View 1 (cartoon, rainbow, N blue to C red):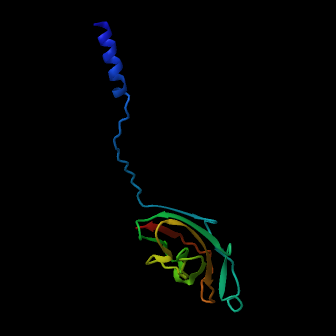
View 2 (cartoon, helix red, strand yellow):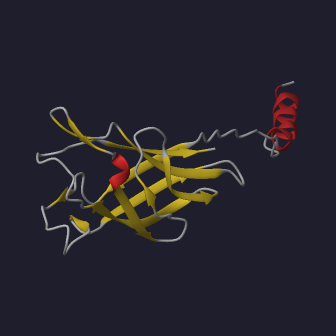
View 3 (spheres, rainbow, N blue to C red):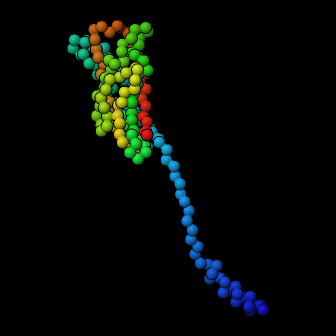
Length: 160
């Protein structure tokens, strides 16, 4: 009987060692994600004689904008900017629209700042990493009241 048991164990051993196959499912969800950075977080305009400098360039002269965005297949990525308000110095104001910009970089668009509606700075199709530059100009007029004016520009990077 002892030999019969050993024979059965040896006879079953190869069947137990055979490879088994099965399948598994891998799920990965990637949601829309966007990241935005600037080479500088503020700009200034120096005082100048409007007769000689009708458009004052900002300092720094250009700001590099770097974006990273995930979008759906064929989805649109949009970078926009809106002024928090008009330029203010106490109760005195200058319209935000006196600030304009030019750009370089694929997908970037020149424009005029607005306190009432977001303005498109750049737009692309699909996910990716992109960068460009934005140069600001201030419309310099004799009619501007004296003062130190400020406003905040709110940039929004969205991916659909």
